Image (tube, rainbow, N blue to C red; front, side):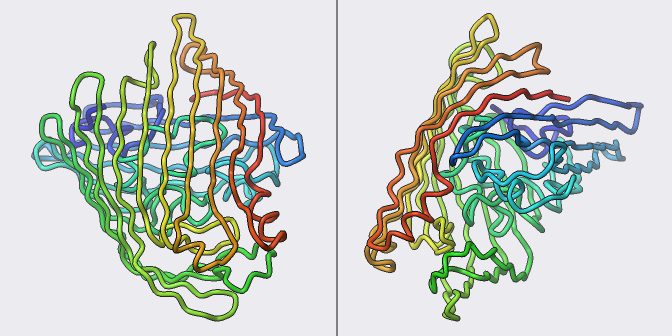
Length: 388
């Protein structure tokens, strides 16, 4: 998936998977488009069956042709919750589902300039350069992205360290032939409170303080079918635990990805990404993972009759340093997903997805084990996604 971003339409200036938009207005100078989707699903997991919002969203894009072949652009996107509050934590969007009762919540907002030769520069809340490395497995509708290092701090949106929908990012993108690059700085000095999970654990993080972070993402179109990605992200967080202890470490992640085919086209699609990281994410009790390794895989086949078969496997495993810091505790998030989608005219998708959890959160403390496991469970969901 080549990304010569400086000369492509607005929808691809910052990479977003399975994005689509309708052009509402266009003249010789200005263009305006609307995109997003509404997703409603019935999900059975964690002992509850209910109707929930499937990360519905709406976005608006604006472009304006400037002098000397420059183009300016703006992208605004909000998460929409049209179905009422939900209490199940089940996906990479769980931060929105469980913590916000608002009808709208901010997902993206940035402004930029692009040129066919000089590339593009954008400022605001946008997908991080790291996401270029690992987007290729993030296509499941219900369960996805929980091992790639994108949705950090226990399935949040990756804003804190700039790897997901990062806050306060300056990003440069350009492409030369089959190679494209994304470089970014996250310029901020912020304190973030972490919601109390009720565990009473003295090692649980209650707040983090983050200054600047830096990231890079490289994409190489090796063949018509094969894409190779690589990159990393680094920052220096300072965390305060419930006991008042201050932790100051370097947060880094690096890795690569391989993609074969296109998710949206008929035929076979396969993707994987692998990462190594330290102090980049937290466990389900809000404690830092001193070091961990994450692997995500995804395979699908879109048949000629528009039925798509898909399967994925995710694992995020903390290393020996985590077990040394928390004696008797193991953290291994591990699950598989299988699904069947019916892609109706590319504007409506009916889907069935199921998850089987193989996680290991064994602990000498039964309370820790129970609280680690509560948000990682088997499940099944059926839904409908209407694409704008």
